[in-house]
Length: 272
Image (cartoon, rainbow, N blue to C red; front, side, top):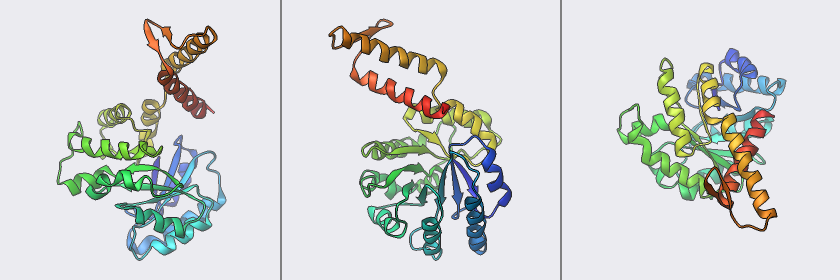
């Protein structure tokens, strides 16, 4: 998911050509107070002009209680965007507040404060329209008074709790932004860690990071081939009246088949 500042027409235009899965039009942190209205107008013109293809379009509004939230939500309700991203969500009330202001759109929550992390499980059950959580790792580091470390050790507890809260309610979980734009090795390491933890994707702020994020978070050809073999072995075992299958010396059960089918479905969606 690519963050694009709402007051940057060239970036918004370029996003139409980039291989990202989602675009987050940002009205919050990336836009100065005096540019909020200009940003709304710029986003309105771009979204109505279209040309974004299958990319998911999400509007990040300003925070609950801010002077700009009502106008942001009115825009989200009026535009053909897919969803709205709420910053600094700390309770179910924030979700329900946006739910009332923006009908019929998916809702995403940024979990980026200690209280939000500790309440992730409750927040995840606040609405049937919730689509997922986005980890706000930079704000979390600040709020925790931690340090930005290459292995992200100070954030591992928070990242795990965000994932637990999302998965408990069947939601997507998107990893936070990597700060170092001139640190490709660090970015790729962060992506690999995100995959290992269980995140579904990465939020990015620069086009150059989209390719490695897609490559690392997307299923590889080898993984897809193995998944298809698992599904085929299971189907043959069931046809033979067996409750388990063996493939490559390993036992295959239903849980392995379910994960293999999820990966195949993901590969089909990415390839399609």
